[in-house]
Image 1 (tube, rainbow, N blue to C red):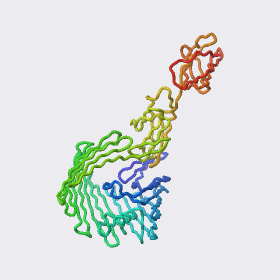
Image 2 (image 1 turned 90 degrees about the horizontal axis):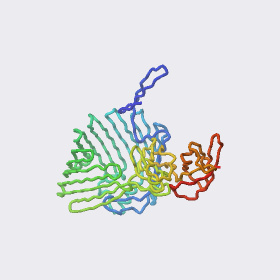
Image 3 (image 1 turned 60 degrees about the horizontal axis):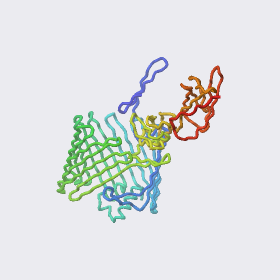
Image 4 (image 1 turned 45 degrees about the horizontal axis):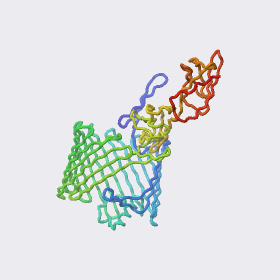
Length: 512
C-alpha cells in the first residue's frame, strides 16, 4: 500500500500476473484505535491554582479520574470515563468515535453527574475530516443540561467560592468550564506549498451571557530561513473585543530562532522581540532564550531570560522575569520516577513507551537505535525512558566494559511495548569464575592437545598446549571427562572453594 495525502493506493497481483489498482480515501485521527487495542489511564491528585504565580496554591479536595478506550474494530473506538472528588462529585460517561467512509471521524459522548444533591447531563457531538489533500475541517457541539458538573467545573466553582470572586464580574472566557453550550467550527486550507490559512468560529453561551468569536490566521515560509504568522479575532457580541497579531520569524540555523512580533488586543499595542536556542532531546543538551517587550497601553517594558539543561534524572530550568517594576526568579526541575527491578529510576521524562534493562552486568553500555544510551548500574540495571510503542525495538548490550568474570547469554534483545506502558528486558548476564586447569596423565606428563573435554556434564572444551583446559564456569565440585580416542577416556575430579577470579593456573591434576 502507498499513502499520499488523503488517499491510499493498493496494488494487487493475481495468479496470472495481472495487476489491479485500488484507491480509497484515507483519513487518520488519534481518536481511532486499531482493532483490539485497549488504552486506559487513572489520575489522582489535588487541583492547583494560579500556576506560575504562587508556589503553594492547592485545593484541599482530592480529585480522581479514569478513562478507557477500546478499538472495537479498525473504524470504531468505544470509550468510557469516570470522575470523582472528595467533596461529593460522581460523574460517569461513555462515547464512541467512528471513521466515516475514510474521509473523516464522527464522535459522540454523553455523561451524567451528581454533585451536592444536584443532577445534570452533558452531550457532545463532533465531526472532523478532510475534503481534499489541502482542505481539512472540524466542528463540535457540546450542551449541558440541568446542573451538570465535572472536575473542571467543580474546580472552577470551588476556586471562585474560596476566593470570594463573582464570576459575573469576570471575563467569561476564562471560565469555559462554566459554559452551558459550546459550538466550534473551523476549516484549514493549504493553498500553496508552505502556506496555509485557517478560519474558525467559536460560540460560548452562559446562563446570562454569550460570546461569538470569529478568528483567522495565515502562515507561510518565505524561504528556508524566513517565515511569518498573522492572526486576527473579533467578538460579534462585544464590538470592542478584537485583536490582531503579526510575527516575522528568522531561523539562521537549526538551533537558533528569532521572532519579531506586534499585536493589538482591543486597542492595546505591544511590540516584542524574542530569540532562543533550541534544546536538543539528548542528555547534556543546553537551551537558552529571552525576550523584550514594550506595552504601549501600560507604558512599561517587560523582559525575560531563561536557560535549561537536560540531565539524565531531570530537566532543569532557570528563569528571570521583569514585568514593569516587578522582578521574578524561578527555578524548576521536572522529571519522572519509575519503580521497577528492585530500585527507583529517575528520568527527565518518560515517553510513549519505556523499558527497564535487567541482568546486563555492571558497567555495560546499552544501545538503542544506534545511540549509546548510557551505562548500567552495579547490578546491571538501566532505564530506557523512551521507546516507540507497538513496534519492534532492538536493544543491544556492549559487553566491552564487562569484568572478565562475567558472561552474557545474548547481546541483542527485541521487545514490543504498548502505549504508555513499560517492559523488562533481561540479558541474562551472570557472574562466573573461570580458570585454566592443567591435566597430566598417570606418568605426570601433560595430556596431548586436541582431545575433547566434557566440562561438568554441560559444556565442551578442548585440551590445549601443555595439557591446559579453559573452564568458563568453575564450580565447587568439578568433573572433567577427556576423550582419549583410541586410548579410551579418563576423568578428573577436583574442588574449587574460591569465589574470586584468579589468573593462577589450577593443577596439575592427574586424569585417571
